[in-house]
Length: 102
Image (cartoon, rainbow, N blue to C red; front, side, top):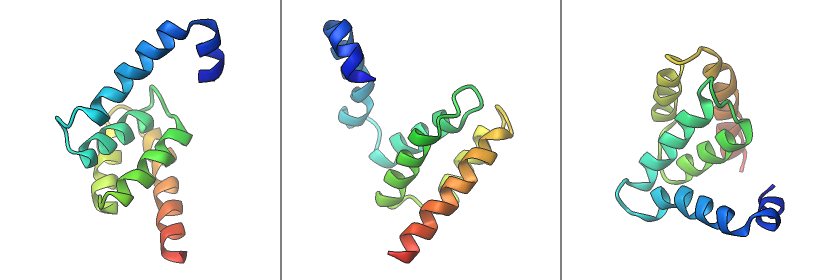
């Protein structure tokens, strides 16, 4: 997708990507908190983006975030919609299983 956008409007694409990377690079929030916020956004019923949620759960676990901390974020996201648990919990269990088997 980004390649296509970059071809159509390279200036806008660069500005957008720079802005979205800023929370990761600024150091204002610890990386674990950034990942937990990304989990909340991707699991929210207004977004529900499974590939991103999987990527951010994996990154959070790699940074030492516990399954219980991730679950609390998913619970908070359910205040926006119960479907966040339907999407997030299976991915959390899948990632924990993959981690245990490796």
